[in-house]
Length: 213
Image: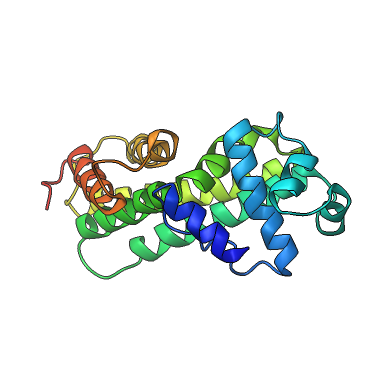
């Protein structure tokens, strides 16, 4: 089953998604992977638990052993994805070096992940409204943490004289929006995820008034 999942990801031109490596047991992990594929293909509301279980090679009844509802599956997917976003951005923002290099690194890494794992990222970023109230509030809190990391980075660069921005908050949101939107349109083609990440890093530097590397 794991080999089939890797082969499927590679056939679609993406990298095997390692986001679920910490999920156990294997059946719970398979259900998450199946849910990602189903939600990305059909949308949350049009997907049934039978669809998800079938993709995972399990019976619908087996799904409820691991997840109480379809919404709980979406919550776990969203939680893992947003935790990853916070970590990627924080690691780049806290790295040593000039702020321009930190910003370029944050954008490059964030964009690359959204391109490499565009199927997962589309669900993480664009199915948020289907979450229940409590889960929605938790995930929004994680999104705000990502926004704060980027906002603080832009503000610090401006204070250090490396960036020329009048509104760090709006600029940070614009940069993050560009990064996230890669998941919506990306499909394997002329440019690799690494090339797109580098291109967007240069765009971000131009947005904050810093010369591209």
